[in-house]
Image (cartoon, rainbow, N blue to C red; front, side, top):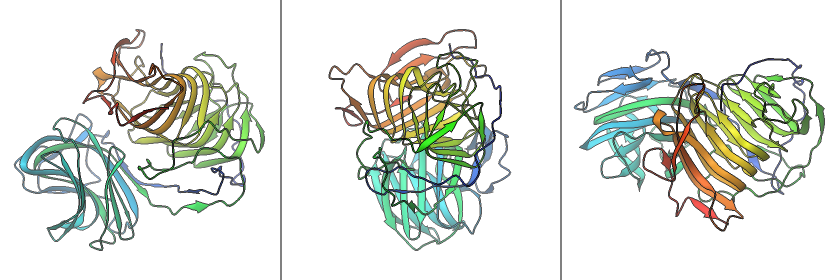
Length: 460
């Protein structure tokens, strides 16, 4: 059973702002970048008031912004500030129709309605990263990628100085250099196509900070989905605590809590009771990082909206390591860290939106991720799992296909399972509260469980 979590909030004074910053690194100093959200729109309010359209027919349909005029040659919608410089914009994009000469795209640094950078989904299973200058297109890079109408794709563009990078579903499509636009808004665009757009997020491109202090080796932490040139999969190395912090009740977090690798303990009884309080409760947009959570840990971490959980380690997962409760859409991030001994699941997703898990180590668990199959409210939920290591874990992710859930996997390393019994993606039929979800299958497909078993899964 997976009923919604109870919110009994026993408060414990938040740590003073002067907690010493301490970043765990992998044997040597590591650069870690942190980003602030500049803009976010999930269209849950049913309008596009923050957007400025040019051409096409735009409306909000089923919780997503839709351009429905398939015959429109050039339909654009812009948002944000013309002064934005270095940032990353991501959006979920679903082509509804795509003519032979059509495209569906995400825009960055739009300094005018005809000058910007564009990541375009094209017919013929092609994706291009383009610099568009007064309507003239220069291709910065391209890749072959399945492009199907009716399927959702997560597009992302990062602009930093003259460097432009485009990604689809967390995988880098191309990186190029251009001086076409130094600043500008974000946008979406269709040409001879109709499409839906959702979960648009803009984060700044904060520069990396560097720590040169010697620390206990732990897996490398990255705040963006790694590319093929990134560090190897997380190892089983476990950090050493820098001290202890006593916990007597739920600790509320707004902004950022940097625990400096202290061990926080304890709360709850270490069991599966649904009535346990969380150790940390994160407000919308909050970040918790560099924390070791001792046992018992109660109901772990609750994220009330979107959140970032970075370099957090659970010695022994009690009920759940973290529960994502936000219903405003957007993406929550689990970056680095690890968890042991989760008899049921590590990450529970009760709200909507996307959970992105990268650089994580899990050992002795039932599931790494589960989209709730019988909560009070039914949502489409999405998870992206990249560059994780799993040992003695039965299932990587469980989703509900009847609600449109998606799970995308890349660079999954499974350790010590020569018989390949670990299930990468389990499929369920979600049901109303009070009933039990039914298991309907497992394995890759082209709609819900998205991965290539030959290239995305490594059996070590």
